Length: 133
Image (cartoon, rainbow, N blue to C red; front, top):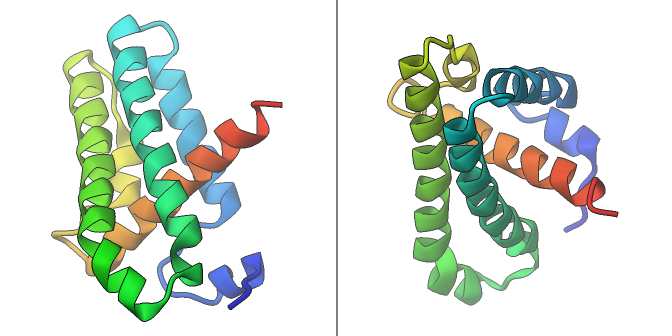
């Protein structure tokens, strides 16, 4: 299956590229001078890169391959969510709002928030990838 950005936009409860850009800008503004936040953000980026790689290849896998790799993908996705939570918690302890975390949403509140977080993880990997020229 071959997809376009328009296909993504037809899903429910998505984040547009513009919304993801705004969330990313909020994060970068909050971590800009804090070495502890930068360290957590770097760990987050490592997790999103692993996750984006798995997710990007997912449509190319057979049903059997997906079944074999699903628990690894879930584990990687959980790691991404944990790192977003760690960063938000750290920033709040430093007196920052970390409103971006609320905007991403929590899977406990709505199952689609897990997908939104995964989408945003792929956006961060995309941004880092195109800036690594």
